[in-house]
Image 1 (tube, one colour):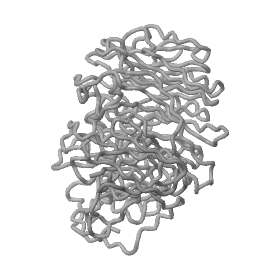
Image 2: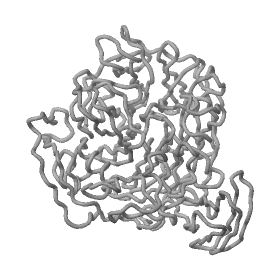
Image 3: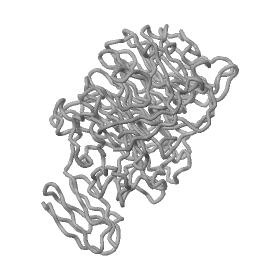
Length: 637
């Protein structure tokens, strides 16, 4: 439990009408209250529905290798419309793909899952008939697919009406009309309507265009063969509400067949309120539903503030908005693009989530729905993560992507006033990672299935004796968590892939296909992600090898609703000690299993069958002990 702290500054903010722009009042300097003390008694009670056990590790899952891409820069720190799914579970996932080192053949790659066939299909090159970049996709009509992408000179949509029938000819596409001075880039696409035949596109201007703000975001609509909205600046996106748009800060919410005329998108930029902009009439009118109040749009601050970014949003069956997000920081300059690579975590928010009584931030009353603000993110999330701080309380239940400190047995180390003798992630040098304009946790994606929510994201592993560190950078790895009560409480993070074949891999840009499938093994979801043997991206010159980036699909089983004791396929734990070792070390398993020990070049040096405890003697060196799909690095001195 963190100590009680004296808070030097608490902003008093009020909201008069929930989730409406005009209902938000921003504090001026005269509205700031004097210093005050926030007192807390007792431990936080969050009534978790999941067992507080050791670190959960998933057994070796089924993985499918999809297309290769030399172009490994998929997004600039914000979500994209990468997936499309039909009511029967037929699904398509897209990514920017290039087979050539110089990216001359760059286009939109597709990976297709057909549950009726039980196989993945994927493209080996971009599907458009012209070089494109940063494509996004949506269902179109009954069996079609639309791709939106930018070319060297313009924005285009590419439509195939019989995609499910096998047609893959997207041709040269249809060009979006531009306003004078606008150079559109990074389009996002979604369809709506009773026949799913109205196409909506959002895109940002590449730079400044008078009289618009920097990287202004524009809207188009295409129906019945013509553009009925052309490069419009929606009221929610004008200069009064946004001072810097950004080329990846908008993403459409998935189409809901129960509300066919609804189209909605999220906006998550450091220069605007975080919000979901919703139309219930196919884009004729729009309303804002706020999830984060910016401290002051267009105002210059000393220091920095935190905000939610990379937001994945879904509507529940009652029409309430639910989001998972990465929080990070930005500087006080209104047009700055700063980010903080050693910060970050994954949180959940919904329009019905009650404000915790421990919160000192957030706009709204305790026990009632609230809107996030920078105070909430700073004090209730970020500072609660610091083991060495005087934060008011431990992380809240909705903060499930916390980078935990673990001991050699993969147990979470509680803070008792002193730092543990051995730790990993607090070392700032080891918190460095590939430059994706993201923090230590990033790229959250989720699927909603009633009150069951499955979230997946990338994060540096944080283990005390971590395998997942290349000597310079920590690798991003795949993690997952689940809620069975609509996001009120969450399971512990699950490290999804720790097989010996994957221990040197970086795993980024995960996308959960928004559909829960089922087979003889139980309910499962498909997670597509970009796999690499180096940290960082070749596109940004963070790495030197161009031909080792692949997209993969991993099958992640989830429990049948209500089976709380068996979430996310937890495997038996493995304990290797002492580590580092002097000549010999012990291996202990919860259950008898086969154990294999490899050296650093992948050679098998020892193997044991059906053991639960053993003592191993080895020469000086670094080894990997593998059992039950889990791998632990051990150093012998």
